[in-house]
Image 1 (cartoon, rainbow, N blue to C red):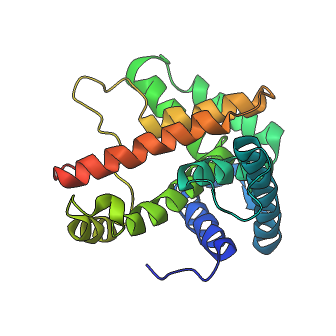
Image 2: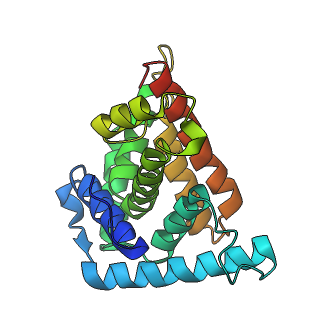
Length: 231
């Protein structure tokens, strides 16, 4: 991974990676169209910067002018996720999308168990693609900082260089394992994306602190999985 020259460059790269990943699984029948990417990136960064400033004031009572206590990168991941939910990457005909999703739902005879799981994955890949992009971009942001944190003092006594090598070769954070017998359960990622979508569609404010905790859990799981060879 090449080191970005600025935070904005890092965020732009995370957006590019998330869009590429999401587009690879979208159903073309949705006729999804992406907004102008350069405009999207500028808007997302402006929102990110504003949300970050507000959160720093909330955390440090407005005393962070000299950047003595910058927000940690888990909160940064959560802020980026929220920014991309506010400034969505994809646009499509909502009525047509709902119609296609309803047809897909009707084609499934019994929406429970494994079939419900497949339908939820379909929703995430298509109707909820903007929330998927937001979540994936946040994971890419978290991956970058987790990767380089491995060489820092915090991991000095836990084979940091080896962890860095493994994580670099893996190219992504470790995902929670789906255990045998859980075929009917949504994956952690799908559950997170649906949760973000429900909150936004119901006009509920997403708690950045709680979201940051979820990203912290993913980071800790990645560290453990790499150290035990289970990633």
